[in-house]
Image (cartoon, rainbow, N blue to C red; front, side):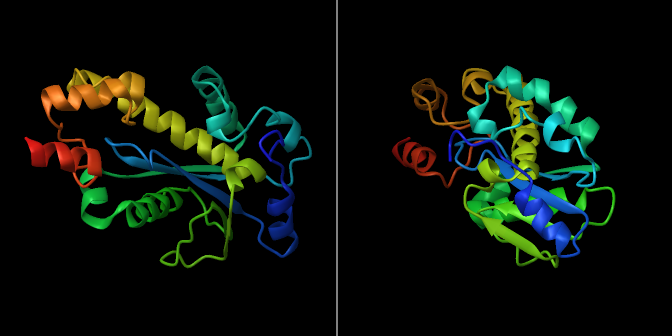
Length: 212
């Protein structure tokens, strides 16, 4: 599965069932110690004959370098019929838990799409609060081109936010670790304590606060 390029078979299956505008949905930042969780929803023009060729370099964001993701973002935006982005803040993650907060970010991304959506393709998670037909598939970001595109949009957008947060909260290396639990991040937490954007219910932060 890891070497396989995502394709449009699931999108075409939904289109053939009468769902013409299919949004692929994915998240970024779910496992980070700090910062928001982001989600993106991308609607591709399924009637475009060269769609797969134009987006042939698109993969799950985790399989791409930061430079490649940045280069693909404007390509995706130029091709897509709609791109929506949503986020849930660290405080919302602490209050609700990461899965409900991820669903919230996804629902917000879907709500930001410019036109009506007929159905959703989602990586792993289901959205019972969104009243649209949906397919939740394991590894959808590796299998479905629209979900892979959404994974890139969410990842690039969140990474840019974390780089900006690095200047607001220096010392944690947010520009380098993007809020994830690296050794330098752990050392900074011991030295500085948590910043306002840390997820205080996460065990490493919770344990350090208990010891402090």
